[in-house]
Length: 213
Image 1 (cartoon, rainbow, N blue to C red):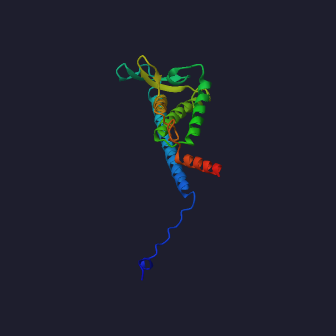
Image 2 (cartoon, one colour):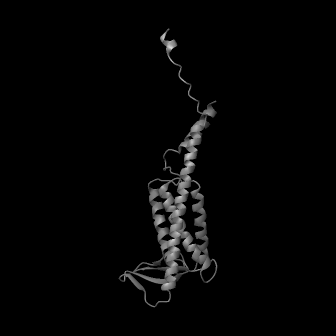
Image 3 (tube, helix red, strand yellow):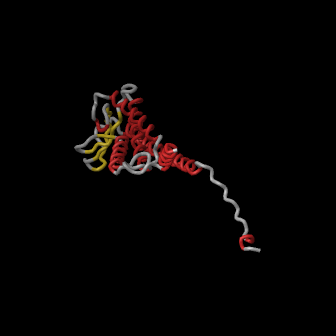
């Protein structure tokens, strides 16, 4: 008996269906996007609830007091101020405009979230969304009227401004967005001038092959 005849036959490996790798990659990206959106919403809800709770507390306990409460000496105090303008008391005569801007910001963030794969961007957009919702709630439901409500500010810093925690969330989110942009990071996880996501690379390769055929 020859050596070739005595060798056992190797079982045939099942063939992988075409496109299985691309389907798995797309499935993984969908999972990542859902997790990033969940993180964005969690950060937004946390920022919103902290802002809302702080405003309810200071309105109930501090509004109407003649003297501010010292937090860090005279440098930082708590005193309730109804703000008709934007963050840090700017634009007092444009309440309706700032209401529309806040609503527009929320829509833009939600549109960006549909292609969100970056964790830092999820945190940044969550802070922006939570802060925008916090101040928009005041615009909609506080006196003097719907869409023209005055925002509750209560953190007063000497020689600076009076603001609230929603303003702080917006500023922190904005700073993070600027830093990410300077680093070349995009919300979809790519970098400026960097390689495209694997799914896009495969689609481009398949398009090129079909063109050559």
